[in-house]
Image (tube, rainbow, N blue to C red; front, side, top):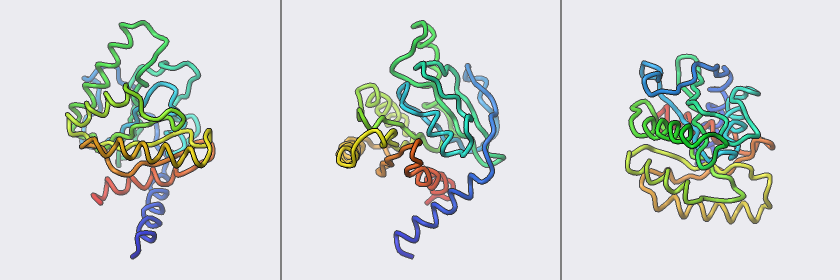
Length: 214
């Protein structure tokens, strides 16, 4: 099979994987509340207002599964969505800014870090970066923490529809260059738009690759 054929097959399997829709399992505010069992977990992380909820909803094919908000920092829990006995999608609170008391921000920041550093079931983190702004220092800090914890993560650029094709090409190249300097960063960067459904199937294909050990 050619590389193109392999990618097409992964996309087919990825779309098939999400024919059955994930459902909300629980919101976690303390590390002791994490689900038991050994189901693989795929976490979505990113700065507040990066479009994380929209991307999760697009990948899952369920409108409103993850709650989007116009108020950055509103999500203060680790929200777990189960794909019927196969895996969990984990929606992490946005980092970098929040319209909440500083003590609250510190509490859920500690929760995020504890989860990312110590969760055996965590198979991959999708690190979302706004394509309009690229990687910021706060993103680099998370990347360094994931490197140190040896947690595999993959950068997904969001809101590609908000910039020109040339800008898309440029930010993709810059992001790949930065990712190549981080040991735990998966080399393939995916440029997405939830609004235009751009490369959502490529994100789904990553689930298949991880689950099948490709």
